[in-house]
Length: 138
Image 1 (cartoon, rainbow, N blue to C red):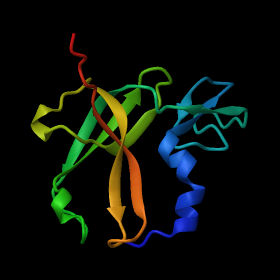
Image 2 (image 1 turned 90 degrees about the horizontal axis):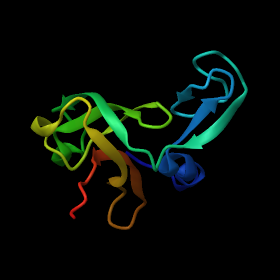
Image 3 (image 1 turned 90 degrees about the vertical axis):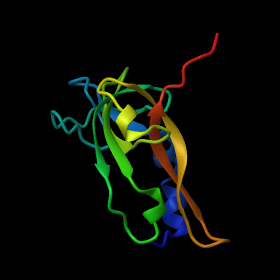
């Protein structure tokens, strides 16, 4: 897969900050961001950042097949999560956890992970994934 620098550069803030839109009329939050509320159709929206919010794991699937060039990443675990504060639903890869350790309701946090790179001197593409919240040692 070839990633071109100009589009990647233009979308970096939205992709890495995990932005969503919250409707000022119905109060619901939609991800990815949209110019119109996907729940009530209002254009009275504001941008919110979800990057500092933990999320609860709702469900997940395990993908055992992979595109050319991504075979070493198998199996790929994709989860549907709901953020704690804004209640936004997000579909994202899960990382740093074995599939058999996953449980509904598990608390997860967003992290930046490398997705791909174009050769030895090409563009490195990053994206948001979720991992279990690390427990603080006291």
